[in-house]
Image 1: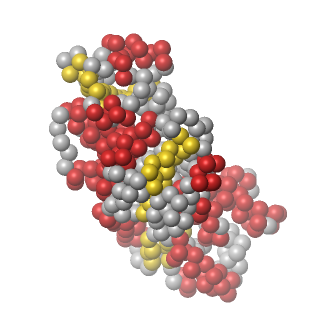
Image 2: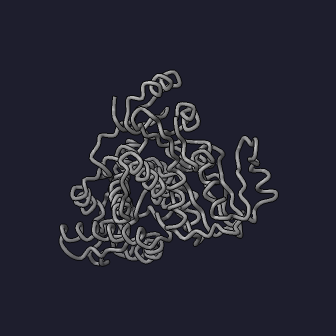
Length: 427
């Protein structure tokens, strides 16, 4: 039996093993357990330290010899340490969320807070908000009971909320196209926090970003709660620079690097080199569209027109964007649909690869819209505002392949480092 690990029901998408093995010199295993297996596991106590996730955060409490004050008040445990045969229970979700709101300077005091969801994470988050003296905390559930209210009641009476916190699984992989509420209905909202960490930026956080609100997604909370658990396991402390480094490493590993720009600007060539250097998988969206249609792009345009091609492009973009750790080269017209951009942003940093007009190809039979020099020039001027608006990073392709690829990676590193260091808005 493993000395350290995570127990729960479904663990296939957990990042806990990756994080813990970056943190300390121990093996950390994912241990899915059924309800029947849980009792035997807890009674045998054949572990040094474990984390606990859905649906066992409350179930494990009767097996404990000691439970700390936060965990007792919350009524849920996510960290258990075996000390000489005695089991000690803690709730580091509390610590992770408390760090999140302090690091991002979220003003909880005297604010009206909506907590979406009513599970174990919601209990920890409500406890943090109480300790930060929120004026009012309302828990919202699709199936309201006890102290939770319905979404219908929210829209009827509580659209004046100041802070919205999502603890529900709405928007989590694989259902990344969902969000629990529409922020347009909350004109006073000033900050949005989401405990979901896959995708990196949920659709709810993406809307907050576009509205200019303070926002943060769940990756940071996930890392800090894991660090606090490790500190209970090993009875040590962790410097701030270690927290920042692990967050940086995990974001660099999981984030998609998405190249947008004009046809023939070099997205595929440079994207392949960047993928090689960053040890990510390369995806050419146009090639994926051709596989989906079982036709070449010129054939799609000739037989069904651009509108059908764009529908296929959006379908494929949504599917590919749900994955992580990719380098994606997009077709030049990807920016014609905001739906495509929103999908790519959930897990990606968008890099606009610019190139001088006289370096762009025209009369290329594989590119139906680049039929002449004038067509390319017109397209360039029409699309340029969108490339600039939607990109996080801009690079001019005016030097050799290796230099451009290295520059792309460095600019992504700088972008992610800036987000971590500012303690403000994040991806």
